[in-house]
Structures are given as C-alpha cells and as structure tokens.
Length: 286
Image (cartoon, rainbow, N blue to C red):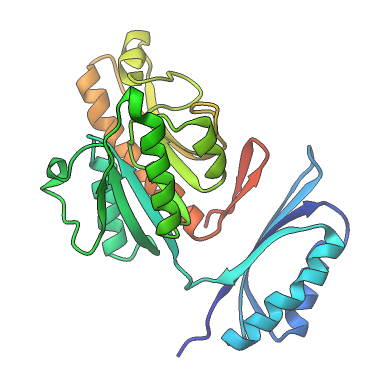
C-alpha cells in the first residue's frame, strides 16, 4: 500500500526562516516532502506556501498536525493541514442552463474531481434535468421569487448546514446571493461568470460583446462576495472569435469555455491549490 499523502497550505507575514522552519519540522517528524511551492508577495509582504508530504501513517499525521501549532504561532501563520484523500463535500447549485452541471458530474464520476456531492439544488424542478443521471445524488428543488428570496435562502443555508457542505458551486445558478449568505460562504463558494471579467458584466454579456465587436470572449471562475461578480478570481480562459460569429455562436463557444474554467477552478480548490490574498488569489497550479 502506498504511503498516505498530506497537504499543508499556509500564509504569513514574510520573514527569514519560514521555509527552513517548515522543512526542518517535517524532517524531524519523519515526513518526506514530495512537492513544495512558494510565493512571496512583495507588495503586501505576505508569504504563501503549499507542501505535499508523506512518510507517516494516520496516527503519525495527527502528531505532526498537533505539534505544528507552535511553529504556526511563531510565524503568525494562517494554515491548513489535512490528508489528501480526505474529500470535501460539495453542493452544486444550478438553474436552467445545465452544461456546467453535466460536465462536473462527468468529471466527478470518472474520478477527475475528488469530492463527495452533498446535493444538487435548483430553482427549477427535477424534470428540467431528466436527461442527466442523478443516481445516488440528493436533488432539492428550491423555487424562488422576488418576494420569497429570503425564505428560499434560509432553506438553502439550512440545507448547507444539514449536509455538512464544505463548498458551494454556482454552476450557472442564475440567482444573486444576498450579502448575508455571501458572507456566510466567504471563501467556500465558487461562481462561473460567462464573461471575461471585469468587462461585460450582467445577464447578457455575449450580446454586449457582439455589439462591441470583440475579438476574444472568455469566462471567469471566482469566489462569491457581496460585490456582484467582483470576488477573488481563481481561473479564466478565452477563445478567439471573428466578425462572422453571431451571438448564438458566442454562446455555443462560451459554453465550452465556462465548462473548462469552472472545472479547473473547482479542482484547484479541492486540491488546496488556492489561497486567498485579499481581493486576489494565489493559485499553485501544477
């Protein structure tokens, strides 16, 4: 049996000795570093690091994790250490457009996205997705109107708590989360925006893009905040278009971009590759 792998992510004010301290601590606890990435943000003087290691069993890991607090306190670290095999519980929210949902389900079933699905939640009924296989996945229909939005969000928040959901993914969920719910989900709610932010915001960015005669379209995955579509960006991608492309062509091409951008952002989060840095993110991609 291969040795279990563990991951450490941390950020702290930059000062000499952080890397030496972390690596020495792991060495002294019989750990073997498999991968290490680091970044010093010279503008904010904050140091970021991600380390994957093995060499200990689960009991040994508990000792490593418990003893790391003294190291973390010495450097004023924000840190997380966990087994790589520990899967996060993810809830997917979706509206009528289901291409991102279908893609995430496929990637989950083939093992590309290491997560447990706590539920699929939609403001549309189950019949909307009769062509998709939800076997073994709880589905919740939470309809919403303008006058029932707060009640619906109360139900949603209770569902998130009851299912012990770690991460919420808005897979083209065409409802704006309230400031209160956005705050509760800070750093653990990812949205895919069908636009290459910060341009062409709102409900119909492809029509706006076509009107402006753009030559590139794109999509943006970001953490949700109270500021609409202004949260820390995790991943983006673009595709070239021409004057021959009409709005339906942009929508078709945009679906492909949205799928791959959301999938990459979700995987980065699941693998603890994303660390918040104020209004930005540090992404330790492969």
